[in-house]
Length: 352
Ligand code: 1DF
Ligand code: MN
Image (cartoon, rainbow, N blue to C red; front, side):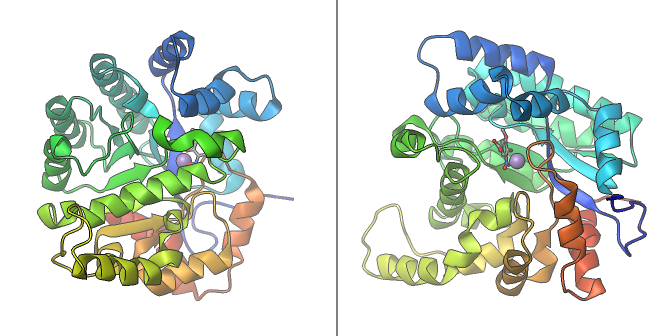
């Protein structure tokens, strides 16, 4: 099969918005965590596999994570991808101690910015930050956006079992909101307190655990009231919204019921009322790992066409057949162009 052509021949450019890379320095820090005592079980399951397993999948992915040049661009060309929006792979700095994490993210942002300068028409960068050190993270987000031209901030969900709605992370959210960039809330394996039964069944990773953990994280940002405190914050979630669009009706009903009966101290009335109002006004959704027409259309229907974006999830999930399937969706060309190109252009301020 000859691959889909890039350059707008389809009537739109393809901008893939959840694409991953790793720096050698971060991987060295990962090695130290893997070799240390009692590593986080989700981290061991995930990065223990990609960094050390001898299978074809692990070695293929690992080689590509480290490339921000010719190999990546050849893979993009072969799949018809015009532009990648790139972020530091999961779990990124979240698994590291605060000092190491802060150093690793500064260096990773510098390396990614350098690659974006070399390939300005192919790469767009998202800034990593070490939330473990919130004040430094806020400064790094400011630096990465204003000096390195990063167009988003990205975090790999929980920070060693902590969630972004905790007040200690307010400086981070404040910086992201002030810099007027979106926050990509990318998955991580579930923390120790949650992973047990999932790991036992092999369901801790991208197959399901990612979505459960990250979907819950997104919900916490809503139900905690954090988005009332930072109302301009725009959050991107992948994997077709980590299933939340499909849950919207029940989320709204049960949230209203809990609020009305004052059942939880941590669940107070919200300014916008319902959970779905936040999903429709503070969230963007990408179809990373979910090249499935009915799911794309359902999300467009309930969240809005201007809030659903294309993503591939390179190098973890990138068969060319998925591009072909998304091209072939029965969808008017105007909407399809919003999905593949225009929504990403607007959100990431991509000038063509
Ligand atoms: C996998 C999937 C790994 C995704 C990822 O980062 C990742 C995987 C370590 O297949 O194990 O980002 N993903 O987003 O679906
Ligand atoms: Mn991903």
